[in-house]
Length: 93
Image (cartoon, rainbow, N blue to C red; front, side, top):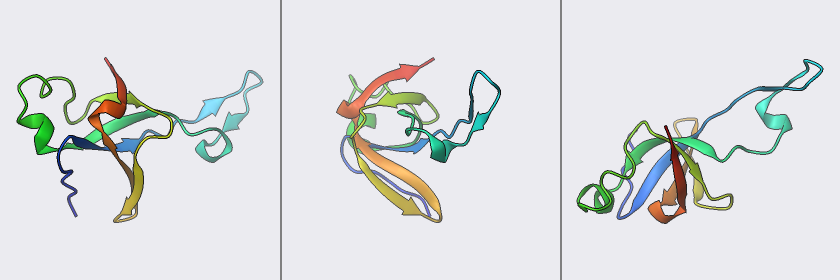
C-alpha cells in the first residue's frame, strides 16, 4: 500500500543502525535511544508544487528531524512517521 502525504508533510522511515561499544559489544536498535535520522519515502503535493520548497527534500534523502515530531503509523508491517516539512532540521549529503 502506498502512502501519499497531504499538504506540506513528508513520510519518513527511521534508519535502524546497530552500534558497537568500545569493548566490541553490539547494541541492537531496541537497546538505545531512537535515532533522529530517517529516509524520505514520500512527499506531499504542497511541497512538490511550491517552487521554493520543492528542491529542499527529495524522495530517498536522509534527513535529521525534530525529536518529538510527527505521527508514527504502521502500514503493511512497516513503521513510518508522517512529519511536517518544518520538522526537518537538515538533509544529510
